[in-house]
Figure 1 (cartoon, rainbow, N blue to C red):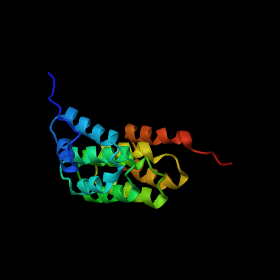
Figure 2 (figure 1 turned 135 degrees about the vertical axis):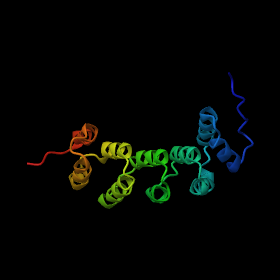
Figure 3 (figure 1 turned 180 degrees about the vertical axis):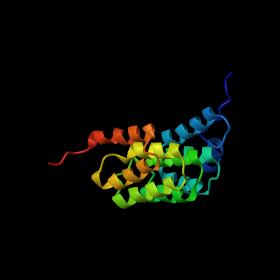
Figure 4 (figure 1 turned 45 degrees about the horizontal axis):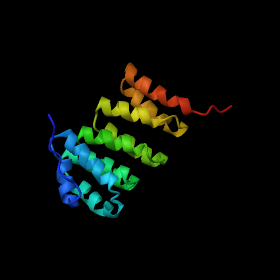
Length: 169
């Protein structure tokens, strides 16, 4: 059946954010896309504040991707959200959005340590997939691998990052 989608032209940021909390994924995606398509870069501070104050995981996820679409994310903002959230669905999106940035070794170590504190293999799998093959990450690989050396998914995820490894002679 057809959804009665609201007209978005006259909405303010709070009303958009309310739509991002809707139980319907279609309405959430519609509002997210409208925010991006309307080029609301001048509303980044309001959207960022809404993100920091949001408690609903769907709202947080859609605000994250809205800010990403408006080039309004930063490593600092992601780090704040990583420290403040414990919802695994939100954390998956935060981890994925980290891949948009070049992380220093210290930032990657902090990300790794924060995620491994959740003791969640699905989060570990995602993190292993994005770790890449930078030689300085090998201690992180070892820690992740040593949790369960027989975990084929971790081995496969870690090995998937090797494609970019430079071989030194």
